[in-house]
Amino acid sequence: MILDTMQFRSNKRGQLTLKPFIEIVVAITIFFIFYYSGVEFGTGEIFEKIQVTRDAALTLDAFNALPGNAYLEFPLNTSDFYIDIKEDKIKIYSYAADPNFGSYLFVKRQGQTLDKEFARPSSIYFQKSGDELKVSKELEPEQIKKQECPERSSRIGNIIITPVSGLSDALAAFIDAEVKEDIPEDTGLLIQLEKEQAEGIRLELNILPNTNSRRLACLIQDQLIEEKISIHTSVSKKYPLSEAKAGISIKIGEQLSKSKIINAVSKAVKEI
Image 1 (cartoon, rainbow, N blue to C red):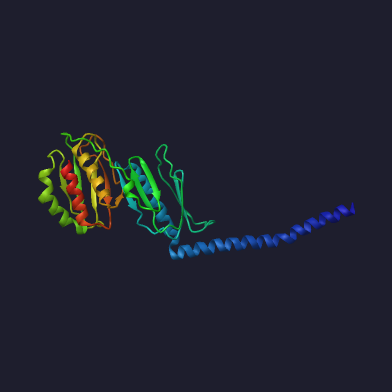
Image 2: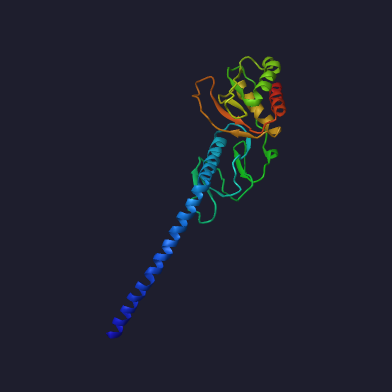
């Protein structure tokens, strides 16, 4: 009986002896979590992770919604982070047990597999060929197959080419001089100069079937990829299918070659 009591007291004493050490370990762990969180907030790293995660997920959404083909070198820094793409979620973190990781959902197409892991990649690339979407560390535009563009049609539609910034004058002059008379009247072409936007061109692609504007948009996309001009996509708005100007807006490039774009548009116009 006495032995049992001594054992009981020894166990209680042992528990009491360990308790301060457990509290110290927990306190140190909490300290380092708050310390590294403070460092990340101070340097802005946590906000950078959130931005990279969100923009990568929205890029996947845009590519899945985009009719036709495209490729993109992701414009934000990824070399400081680990990137996991699993199922319908992107996770970005600085180290394995990073409590301040970024996480964002995207809409995955049925049957689509995008499971990827990247360890501090210098760059990542998004590529879409038909319904196939890839994320990789290498740019492979030559693997993007040409589309089967719609046949010419007499149905009325619109494609809007919006040159902006440094490209405005050159592309507008080219369109005025060479393109208008070569495009069927039912296709339509509208030039808008919007200096306040980043340098690029915005195409508004007609998503109505059997329209010349959809055919022209398809041909321009193929030619841009052939000229190795990166297509930065952002789906801005979709119109009801009943409207003539139904379309999806995409933004093309930031490091752009005027001559390559003019060449791509010229070839597409000749094919329509």
